[in-house]
Image 1: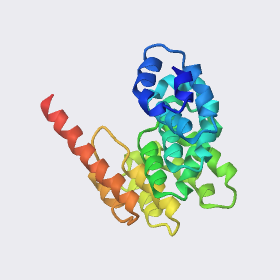
Image 2: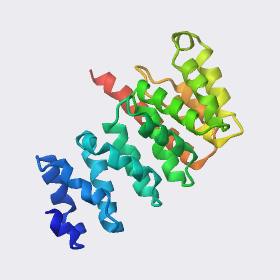
Image 3: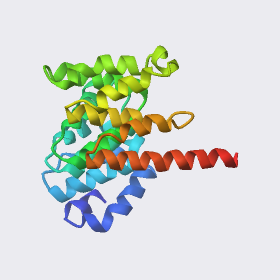
Image 4: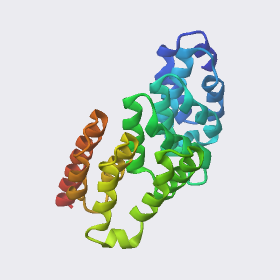
Amino acid sequence: MIELVMTGKETEFSQELYLAFWNGFPIENLRPMLVSSNPEILSLAAYLIYELGTKVRCLLDDIVPLLDHEDPQIRANAVIALGQCATKFDTIALGKVIELLDDPDPFVHRIVMRFIQYCEVGMLITGINEAAATKKETVFEQFPRVISSFFSRRANRSSSGLPNILKWLLSHENPIANRLGVGLATRPRLIADENLIDLAERVEQEECRNVIKWARKSAYLAYAETLRL
């Protein structure tokens, strides 16, 4: 099947490839596509890692370079795949994901904010710390302290702790900090905190607004689901 894709007929076999990999075809056979110089084959590979999620863990070292690819869709697919298959111990990979808060493409910003919404706390802390260590003398260096405060028990118990942290990020002059704030403000909790989402509304970047809109819809659906229990 891989040989057929290499002939340039990848659009005809995308679903067949996905089903084959999902049903036991060795995931390692996807590696030649991830390093292909053919843009259509690489695009298909990026689509497959996005769809296969946790199954592509063994290809993590091949996925990380895609975060630097010139195509924003490929960068975005790599972020989504890493959100599903990475762990808090994948320091370099997670750091590069967080660095994409400074990506030139707004679509990628949205995907990284979604990553911040749903990744495990340990993954987020690892990524923030690594990005701060790599991006010296930038706003990223300020984020480890912010994240430590945000996830502290004291801040989560305080009526003002979380809002104050988010206000600092959301009103920051640097849009990178705004995006981090939106991601944090819209993280799911046992009970959706509309007050935190309201704080995020102060950010006017279009992709931030899209993330907030999606978060409100998800919070509503989650609440409706609890009413049916």
